[in-house]
Image 1 (cartoon, rainbow, N blue to C red):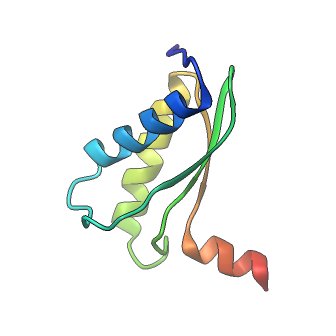
Image 2 (cartoon, rainbow, N blue to C red):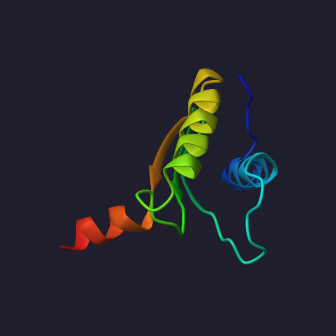
Length: 88
Protein backbone atom coordinates (compact mmCIF):
# COMPACT_ATOMS: atom_id res chain seq x y z
CA UNK A 1 0.00 0.00 0.00
CA UNK A 2 1.26 3.47 -0.88
CA UNK A 3 1.76 5.76 2.10
CA UNK A 4 1.34 9.52 2.08
CA UNK A 5 3.09 12.05 4.31
CA UNK A 6 0.35 14.68 4.17
CA UNK A 7 -3.08 15.50 2.79
CA UNK A 8 -1.39 17.62 0.12
CA UNK A 9 0.74 14.63 -0.93
CA UNK A 10 -2.40 12.48 -1.38
CA UNK A 11 -4.27 15.25 -3.23
CA UNK A 12 -1.40 15.82 -5.69
CA UNK A 13 -0.96 12.07 -6.22
CA UNK A 14 -4.64 11.63 -7.12
CA UNK A 15 -4.69 14.62 -9.48
CA UNK A 16 -1.57 13.39 -11.28
CA UNK A 17 -2.84 9.77 -11.36
CA UNK A 18 -6.10 10.69 -13.09
CA UNK A 19 -4.49 13.29 -15.40
CA UNK A 20 -2.00 10.70 -16.66
CA UNK A 21 -4.47 7.84 -17.07
CA UNK A 22 -7.48 9.63 -18.61
CA UNK A 23 -6.42 10.52 -22.15
CA UNK A 24 -7.96 13.41 -24.02
CA UNK A 25 -8.88 15.62 -21.08
CA UNK A 26 -9.27 19.29 -21.98
CA UNK A 27 -6.66 21.69 -20.63
CA UNK A 28 -9.22 23.41 -18.40
CA UNK A 29 -10.42 20.13 -16.81
CA UNK A 30 -10.36 20.62 -13.02
CA UNK A 31 -10.46 17.52 -10.90
CA UNK A 32 -11.25 18.50 -7.31
CA UNK A 33 -9.95 16.28 -4.52
CA UNK A 34 -11.17 16.53 -0.94
CA UNK A 35 -8.96 14.54 1.42
CA UNK A 36 -10.77 13.03 4.41
CA UNK A 37 -7.60 11.46 5.83
CA UNK A 38 -4.21 10.41 4.54
CA UNK A 39 -3.63 7.61 7.07
CA UNK A 40 -5.56 5.56 5.99
CA UNK A 41 -5.90 7.28 2.62
CA UNK A 42 -9.52 8.39 2.08
CA UNK A 43 -10.68 11.05 -0.36
CA UNK A 44 -13.55 12.33 -2.49
CA UNK A 45 -13.14 13.12 -6.19
CA UNK A 46 -15.36 15.73 -7.81
CA UNK A 47 -15.38 15.49 -11.59
CA UNK A 48 -16.75 18.45 -13.60
CA UNK A 49 -18.59 16.19 -16.08
CA UNK A 50 -21.90 14.35 -16.21
CA UNK A 51 -21.67 10.59 -15.74
CA UNK A 52 -24.74 9.91 -17.87
CA UNK A 53 -23.45 11.91 -20.83
CA UNK A 54 -20.34 9.81 -21.35
CA UNK A 55 -20.64 6.21 -20.10
CA UNK A 56 -17.27 5.22 -21.62
CA UNK A 57 -15.46 7.91 -19.62
CA UNK A 58 -17.40 6.98 -16.45
CA UNK A 59 -16.34 3.36 -16.97
CA UNK A 60 -12.68 4.44 -17.30
CA UNK A 61 -12.96 6.39 -14.04
CA UNK A 62 -14.59 3.40 -12.31
CA UNK A 63 -11.73 1.13 -13.44
CA UNK A 64 -9.11 3.57 -12.15
CA UNK A 65 -10.94 3.92 -8.82
CA UNK A 66 -11.06 0.11 -8.50
CA UNK A 67 -7.30 -0.02 -9.19
CA UNK A 68 -6.64 2.50 -6.42
CA UNK A 69 -8.97 0.69 -4.01
CA UNK A 70 -7.01 -2.52 -4.57
CA UNK A 71 -3.95 -0.53 -3.47
CA UNK A 72 -5.68 0.48 -0.23
CA UNK A 73 -7.10 3.92 -1.08
CA UNK A 74 -10.75 4.56 -0.26
CA UNK A 75 -12.39 6.90 -2.78
CA UNK A 76 -15.80 8.42 -3.37
CA UNK A 77 -16.55 9.83 -6.82
CA UNK A 78 -19.02 12.65 -7.48
CA UNK A 79 -20.10 13.86 -10.93
CA UNK A 80 -22.01 17.04 -11.83
CA UNK A 81 -25.29 15.12 -12.03
CA UNK A 82 -24.70 13.78 -8.49
CA UNK A 83 -24.53 17.33 -7.17
CA UNK A 84 -27.70 18.31 -9.03
CA UNK A 85 -29.55 15.35 -7.49
CA UNK A 86 -28.32 16.26 -4.02
CA UNK A 87 -29.62 19.82 -4.36
CA UNK A 88 -33.11 18.76 -5.47
